[in-house]
Length: 64
Image 1: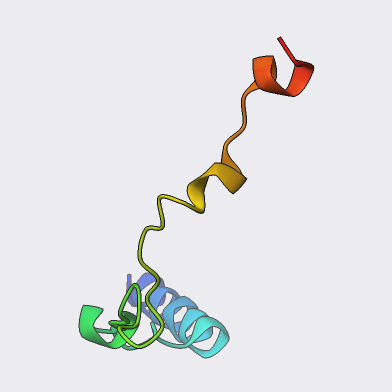
Image 2: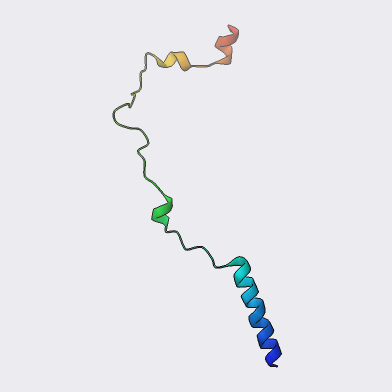
């Protein structure tokens, strides 16, 4: 019976040398960064007079 225990211990030692240990846990705070969506210095506002440049309508394109 002692042979079974030593075999299991030997297999465990082989697994530990081959695979090592699990990596250390990484906290959520270390994985995320906070960045402003739109910096206040270069923020552009809505321009209703210039919005026609981006308007797309198939009927107008075809001249209907």
